[in-house]
Length: 447
Image (tube, rainbow, N blue to C red; front, top):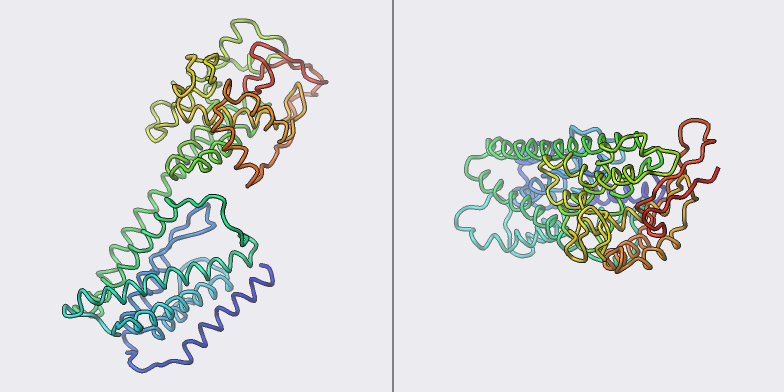
């Protein structure tokens, strides 16, 4: 961890300790505070890992806002800091300290917002409604803002983000995250109300649905991972047959996702287009290996067999229900805007949107990869070829989106793949994805 990040974590923890020490401590019932600590421990322990374990979500917002109502700002901060050592998650000391300090500070800030707008510490009763919603919603808003600032500053200290305005704000994704946070936060008021009605047993009544929600979310994540593992296995099978395209499927998946994000597609469609990119060449499993790796000029029949691979790919994966719109991308990624592509000769917007996206990502990766008959082109050269083919072979909108995304996020060029054997054979292969190579033209590789 960089030194700046360690200093920042230390400041967060010291600020939390100082806020608790300064008080005031009057009105905090020790028994209630102990139960708040238990609630913090449980909600932090049932977080669910996301994004390959790099991040996670937890219902701790509910615990924090319930603590704000039940024991006030100082009690909420003290409960969060005291719970940090007991959270049942595999965390190093620095991360555990930061999480405790972070939750303490956001609870402290949210608690003061709650009090400032007339909120009263203690379980609300029927007479407090609906007016208690005003200070509680203010506390919820402050909680979100302070939490985002604390996490954002940590990411900046870690070098993960830079202080620059985004070129495109993905409002749909932000709105989804904020609505999820709002739902957890409102659960905090429910906890406080139930607490006032039945006392300490409320913690059991509240935690059961939290555990069920965590279990359901885990099942969803596990299913998604199983889907991705299945598709990755199919990609590996394709690349085993065609060694010159090693890693090609995953790079096309990445490029297609970049285009979709640049176009502002919702997260679900972005994930689906990535699936389509992974599987766009799965139909090559139905093409004889001797054709894919043939060191001589292809016959008319062999060339026709390769042109059938989009349809074969569709037939292979069409029963996989979660692919949905991805099937159109797999089937039609070799269509051309002028109608001279295959397998159906579609033109213009008759080509499914996913097919037009994958066509651009496929050609871009092909041109920036080393093949048997040529060296990899530079990214600038590939951009020039894509612009040259815009309107005839490629959808100009997709070309512009890819260029913008790559200029912003960069693109990692793949290493050259060595064929099996001593590499002395001359290989001549048709490159269907390179716009600078006319159809039916076969080039010989450099020795």
